[in-house]
Length: 340
Image 1 (tube, rainbow, N blue to C red):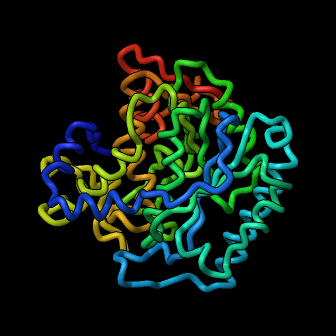
Image 2: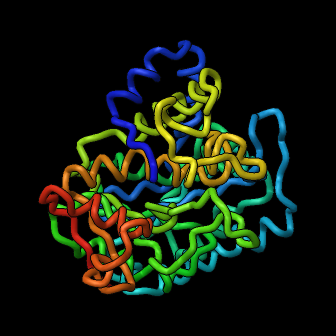
């Protein structure tokens, strides 16, 4: 389905990039200040908040979403998420905190009131804010910022959510991963096996999008990862820039691979779904090409699913979930599947 990019291969491409390009990408992940750090709480729900059009492809576009739409879909949804988290057993028990990676300009504008965020959290004992040094361009790097929590070695468990998620829909997944076998370093939700995985819902044609890792439902045990997620994100961005600039098939990760059933261009995703580093879908592309296969090969992935794992084994061989299942359990790997 998808090509696997080894961490060393991505690093080699990044090292060959022009220094100014490397520095430019690296700067997008810089943190300006941490507001209300909570170092004594070692489990974290991580989210990002920014105000950009997710289809922006380069910084000069400066296209933003309709303000009322953004406020209702994202900002007020985040407020509700914080409130629901704070009322829950996770928020009341003292074992969990929320972390918001906040776009630089939002504190200088009147769009975000820090006091409003802390009021939703009923004080400062469960919420910390990482004020970024830059703004997102489009959907990225804003959606990628939330994965920076995976580099925080003070955390036992970090879990990434979308700000327009309903907290009650995520609670069981968060706890399922938190309570998973200790050798499992990376956790993700498995897509429903009977989905047709069409990107274009009106036409049953490729490319398909099998979300190996859903961007808003994955977790990490940072103390056990042994890698830098920030470095991996920078390296993969430079990998994709290199592919677009040098390849006749920029939607592929390698010239001699053919993954067009899943990676062919579609609509404005001319480099494949999520194939350009600033657009919607790139965060999941990064996870499925780089992070998920790395931990799956190590036998350290915990997968929660609404389906019986025994039924997954019986799926047709061409079903994406079956391909995923076989990859995880092939060669005696100790990846874990659990129904919830």
